[in-house]
Image: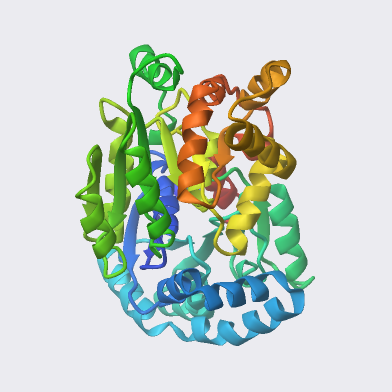
Length: 437
């Protein structure tokens, strides 16, 4: 990877208020930079993809419309063709920021510009040849796809390399490109921050085991990251209220916005719930990661199947390897992420989920004859879906503990599959180095 760490190379990360997931991925890439790498970050404010995403996630009719054009091939093609000109025009602020970079780093002859959102990549592609000639630098754009979702808009013709979190998605994105396209698309494992891969001490892991032990009286610690679009907060408020009356405690992390203000005020009144409020997206992501270094690290996490669900790649005895309880997906990318987990056997499939809910919610217990079978299955899971009702979800979580399902999930051992390795960050830097000429 000499080209990435060479003295003439500068890595430029592009950041914008386009959702917490894109910031998390960018931070993971920064955490995994090779020694000697020189980098900087530029903040862009004129990209409004975050507002589009928030509206599409929070307003039911817009959510249905968004899912329709993302899943219908013809509608997806039309929508992509309509929105691309807007993103491609967003070059003014980008040019200003890169002019500042040239002044700050006049001796750098190669820029590797890394984008973790398609809205940031399109304007880079539009201006990179112009600026390369103007400043006498080689400019390469690397795009990191943040969901396992092969949507046409991520097939960015003109980027040097697009890195997708599975072979299936990489192959599908390749089909969207023109046959003569020089853009390279490669599959890598999802980029997990190296800090979250650190192994727990024996004492820390024992604390986890005690939380999951059906016979122990230790409180079960649950983390709840609030999405950038602040969706499902009514569901989460009800769920926390119910579980807080039992032996559960919570750490809730989110950015203080007009969407979350009322929810946070409610949370502050709930016993056994601590709140970590970020005043910016960056601070919120930092607060979230810091909770995994508490003396009592969360054992469970309740989250949407966003990019957060890729923590399923981690092992339970690693710093970020919480057991995941997944709420309803919002948007095609989250349905696709669920499919990633199911096809890799990290999540009960639809039939298993229905049967598990029947046994735990309707019958109240696992059939004695099937108990060994369910515990064996659970030892291969890293996540379980929650019912839609907060009352049923609360009861389901209690039963998962009482029946020992959660305890069995601690026995998970990673499978030797390319998509499931936790070194996605190093894979990405290796792939980027390979395209530098």
